[in-house]
Length: 267
Image (cartoon, rainbow, N blue to C red; front, side, top):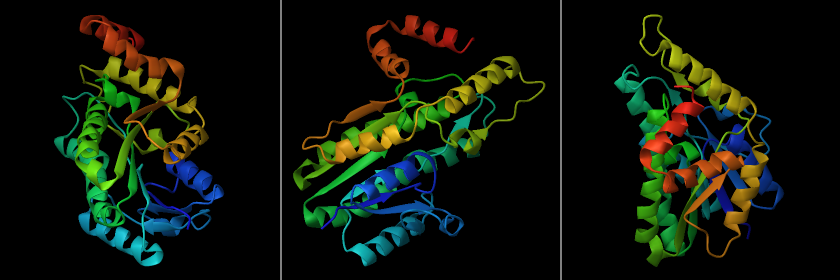
């Protein structure tokens, strides 16, 4: 029987590419969306899901199990961006970002674990970000939420070893998706002391997304991980310099690395 894969945030961008690619490879794929009725042309079924609501998560997983009687792979892909000076981002927006990028994936994991444990088999793939490996200017909340998911994954892996359930992080760099349009942007206030550097950084970030990699690359990597006998803990996908920035952080003195990032963002 074909493996059953559930992909959160499967209606567009990276999630959609992963779903279509795996479906073409013969997997039984289900995606999720807050508004699945808006995507009638989806090449795989979409289940209604709001990852910030525990009741929605429970209903989504229950619906999947009622249709397939199993779940072999969970891809925690749903996420949102957020930008702005840390001093000026409303605390409610910070909390909302963590609800989607961190607590949502944790609740999804906990919802599918009983089914995977009963089969003594399962795989969970968390889509994080290369930004989660470093504190970036005006993206601090996003970096923190994705970095936290990276560390949570490491802990889960050790706790789940005896159940034959594996978990991996896949950290993409910039990909050509609609993530920039869906970000929460702290208002660029006229009287803000951060107006110039924040405005410059915001334009730079958007240009990186516009010229980003094809999401198909992420789909191919996900397939390779699913078919791997011994999946690694961490994977980084994207442009060479973005991946190499993680290596530089490990080998450079902190102040040198900070100066390098500041120079890149013209701060």
